[in-house]
Image (cartoon, rainbow, N blue to C red; front, side):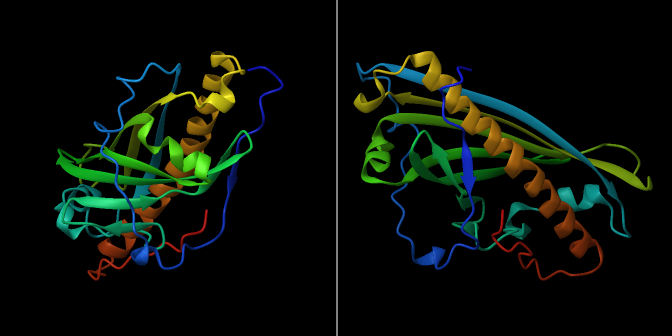
Length: 230
C-alpha cells in the first residue's frame, strides 16, 4: 500500500449506553446495492479464521454448540441486542477511515449447522458524520461467519473452537474521494476490514469460551458476560 494512505484506527468509547433506545434504520443489503449507479466503485474484502483450544468441563462443547439459537446468550449486552429468536443487532466499535469516523451497525441472522452455526449479514447501517451517513444507500455488504467445534470424541479433554469469517463491501466512491486512485481507496478499505476481523474475532471467540464455561458449570441464566470494552 502507498505510504500516503492514512493509518486505520479503532476508537473505543467503552460500553455503549442506552442502545435499546437507539432508533436504527436497517438497510437491506438488496436495497443498498450499488448495481444501478454509474458512480465509480471500490471493493473491499477480507477473510480470517481464528481457532482456540477449549478445555472441556462436565458438559461437552459439542452439546453447547448444539443449543438452539433461542437459547443463545447475546454475549455482550452493551454491543449486541436480540431482535427476535434468530436475529441480532450488533454495534461495532468506531473505526477511522481516512479522516472519517464510522460506526457500523449490523443486523445478522444465526442459522444452526452441524457442530455449530452460521452468522449471515442481513443489513448494515453506517453511523457518523453527515457525509458518512449519506453513504447508507450507496454501498452493499455481505458477511458470513461460520462457528464450529471439532468433531473429536466428547470425552477428549481438549476441543477446538473455530470461527471463519469472510466479508465484502462494494461502495460508490464519494465525489470527495474521486481524486484518489481507486486502488488506494480499495487498499485502505481492505485494511479497515482486516483490522476489524483481527480485533473482533479473537474477542468473539473469547466471549464464546467464557459463556461455554459458565453454561458447562451449571449456569443456565444465559446472561451476557461481556462489558462492551474492546
